Image 1 (cartoon, rainbow, N blue to C red):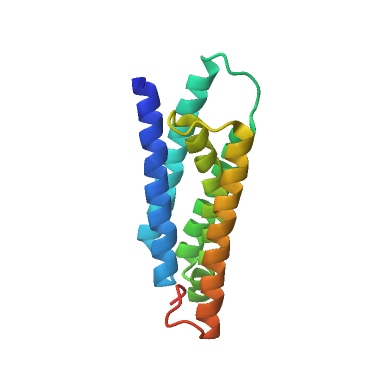
Image 2 (tube, one colour; image 1 turned 180 degrees about the horizontal axis):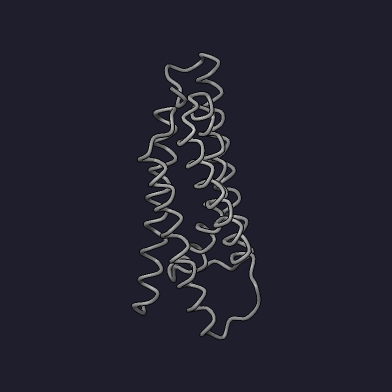
Length: 168
């Protein structure tokens, strides 16, 4: 594995760590703090850096065309940028109501970001190395199950059917 590929893989994996920490920390606390806003920006910076590095690697290979992985990656970075900007504005305004509702958008953006992450992992890891179509389908199935789990859990928490809610 080339140093450039290692760098890209590490930075994109750091994006997963920072973004997941920010989204689920904010969900757990039910309010948006500066710590979570900074984690969103760190996740965006890492993902953008890793993606640009991966794009550079791909441009030097025999691969051609604009793949679905590249398209979903660009969409995910755009969503992450909108999310980080909205988080910053929401945090600065200080509206408690807006901060408490922000976690739903955070979760949707995180789920959307997972699609290209999972596709890249399934296509890029030599031990797995699925074909693109299988990787796309698998990523959509995984993300759909996560969404179903998270939003069902939220609903049960709000309806009082479970012992705790993530929106506290």
